[in-house]
Every structure is written in C-alpha cells, then in structure tokens.
Length: 207
Image (cartoon, rainbow, N blue to C red; front, side):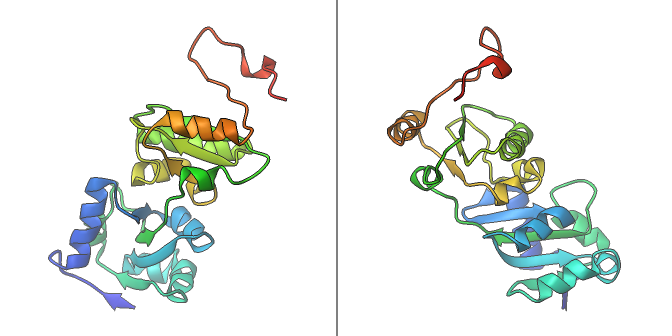
C-alpha cells in the first residue's frame, strides 16, 4: 500500500480536478465506504482508492483489503490531505476514482419488459440521484437523462443515488425526442409526469 503526503502529488490534483468538474469522461469520483463497496460488485473499474491510515487499519480495514485484491492502486494519505481530495466538507475515510462506460440509449432500451425513466431538465444533481434511487426501487430497467439534466455520473448525483447508478443502466441523450421515439419503437408506452393537473400515479392505468 502506497503512502502519499504531498499536496503537489499529481494524484491529489487529479482528485481535485474531478471533484471540481463532476467527472472527467469515463472517470468518476466515488466518495464514501458505501459507494466504493458498491463499485467492487459492479462494472466499474476502480483505478485508485485512497484511505486515511486510521480508516485503512480500523473501520475500513476489510474494504482496504478487498480493494488491494483488485488492480486498483490503494493509497493512504494523511487525514488533512484526504479532506482536500474529497468532494465533501467532511471526508468519509475513503475516496476513489473509477472508470465507467456510460451506456447508450439503445443499450438502455435493450431489456424487456421495460420501465424506463426519462429525465427532462432535472437540474439539481441531488434530485437526479434521488430519482435514480427511486427508479431502481420501483423496478425500472433504465434511466435516460435528457439535455438540461444534471450529469447522472457526477459525484453529487452518484452520492444521491446511493449506488443505484452502478446497478441500473443509465444513459444520457443529446435530445429526448429521438430517445422517446426509440422507446416507442421498442414498444414502450409513454407517460409524462407533471407537477399539477395530472392523474395520481395510483389511479393511472399502467398495464
């Protein structure tokens, strides 16, 4: 297990850059024990996992051992340095960078039967994460985010989804119209959720 102490280390700068941008291409930022645990059982390739020494030898020792058994670099840093690398104010003892290939709309529509949630201009990443979490709980087969929606793979949305994004196919569409057309062509019935004036979900005929 490596140990890093300098704030000038390129790895520290990379964590801070991804935290600032939300994600960088296929590279996503995972903060906290739960998300790193979920990543170990998902399609994510963990590249770097960083612990503070006390956590790596104490409460998160089993997680550190599991991460060390992968191809990921496992590193310890002083607690103050971990706080600088974490995207949240109170560091949780572990942060990681992973690589996740985002699915295309066509890939998201492959499963049958389908219950697909389309997100239209949901700007708050925490809300995006909460919707993805609720979608998984309701048995959805995919989530497709349209333009104007916060990045579902940004770290804030990932935290809000509490691991659901790592289990549920999630795609982003440059335009919702073609994505909705593809869903319709695949036999998906379309329903729109509105803030007011609609039919209560419990009374809607979804069969």
